[in-house]
Image (cartoon, rainbow, N blue to C red; front, side, top):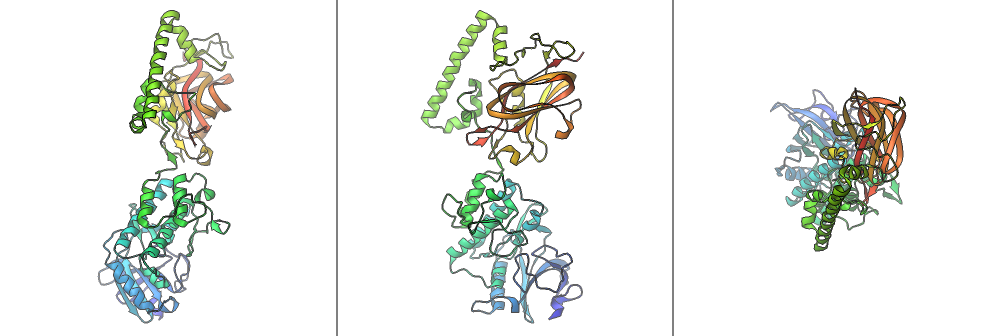
Amino acid sequence: MPEVVEPGPRRVQRYRLEERLDGAGRRTGTADPGSPATSGGLPAGTTYWRAEDELLARPVSVCLIDLAGSAGNGESPADAVLAAARRAAALPDPRFLRVLDASQLDGHVYVVSEWVAATDLAGLVADGPLPAGEARALAADLAAAISAAHTAGLAHLCLTPEHVLRTAHGQLKVAGLAVDAAARGLRAADQAEAAERDVRGIGAVLYAALTARWPGDLPSTLPPAPLADDAACSPRQVRAGVPHDLDEITCRALCLPARRAESIATPADLGAALASAGHTTRMPAVGRSDVPASRTGPPGEDEYRAEEDRDAPSEGRARSRAVTLAWVAAAIVLVTGLSLFGGQVVMTALDGDDNGGPAAADGGSDGDTDATGAPLRRLEVAGVQTFDPAPGDGEEHDELAPLAVDRDPATAWTTVNYYDPIHFLKDGVGLVLDLGAPVDVSEVVIRAEGGPTDVEVRVAERRPTTLRGYAEFDRTSNATGATALRVAEPARARFVLVWLTDLPKVGGNYVGEISEITVRGVPAG
């Protein structure tokens, strides 16, 4: 029947075939439109077309199934496909491509669905995996849609990346509900088996979104997932930086050996697990109670952990009260010290270096001079902002940045919390200090907390938007406490970038913390 498999003037009943597709919405490019489509997860003898409904003058999608190439399991393949199309058409869920028509014609069955301008998952990850939060949201929407279909007595049974579409407005569209499984001769013995198969399918789609690899048994245009002991590697083994919780959920859905909890039974359960997962590759900033005991914030920081304290057990609340009392006692000692020895001595001690470094943080020269003999002084900071260029997302606690230059080492700016070393994700993260006008900078003292931190200092006279726009000043590895970075010849700069390239591990994750930055040099004028 050549007239129903050629594009252009040929038609299937009232539908004129316009363009052969590689899946529910992907163009084949220069592929022979008459050849069977076996890629993209399609069974032999099944082709997709963009077509024109000549009666209603609208674009539609046509799935054309050659019954000679379709599998059957005891009933007529045509009857199975048509019955599945009727059941799918009765589901009024906008997340599925709506079935508009279905019939049998000369050894073929055609199923007509709405046409949407969308990209399937294989196309979305063609240039690399999706961000973890985006992958989670896509899988959660898919789980909710499949769960609704199960409630209506329908199942998909053969999910692949080519079945999962996303429109330009970010809406999910699922192709092939019930119909593609019928064309393949696939059916589930009962509801439990249908749920198990669709959970595996959603898990495989999530795996593909996180890694751009395909772990499923059905064919896909994506490259296959790597194997270890005849099982797919976990997402984190394939791609560094995949969050632990999404890795665990994916392994549970696919029943991979790496899972540490029981497998997931239904799409609804999978959706619930995804709803509790993190939205990005990073966690919120660690609370002050998570910072090592060698460093505890002042009483005023209680506002930052009010939520934690409300939910903490009585022992934790008692510990919090003990810390508060300790700080009250410390405050009394401090006031006494101020009255006996003078505020200048105390401020110098607080802002100096407990490791034997520079102590001229109060603005005085401390006798130091630059290469020209000019006395060095602490330079005023007119403003400070976080610096997180692409591929960063700019969410590095900009509101806490001023705490790094407030002359109070008991307060600090922190990065967000990372699951993995930062170099797996990007070059680094940092703070940009604006000195108000170009000055001669000779030294930058950085107090790093939490553990050894790799730090670079870079400078510029005009504020760049990229890391490359800053000139190198000095760098150090494994900085702890107050660390001075300096140059022999002063550097003319208005903007000073403190750039963290390796973060310490705190509470099982990675987080950077800077409690104080002091810039020393020769003021303008």
